[in-house]
Length: 52
Image (cartoon, rainbow, N blue to C red):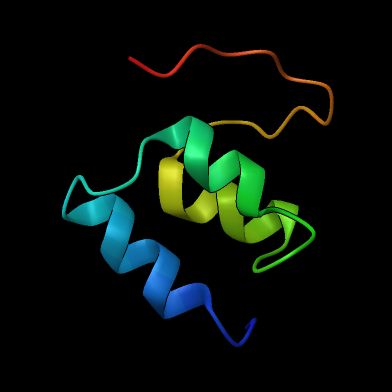
C-alpha cells in the first residue's frame, strides 16, 4: 500500500477529491490498482475527464 493511500481514500470518501483528482494522484501518491480500489472505476492511463 502506498504511503498516501489512506489520505487519498479519505479525501475521496469525504468528497474533498473527485475521481479525476484521484486519477491525477496515480504515479505520484498512489498506484493504478489503488485508484481502482478507491473509486471502483477502471483506471485508464490517458483518461480525459472534466472536474465540475
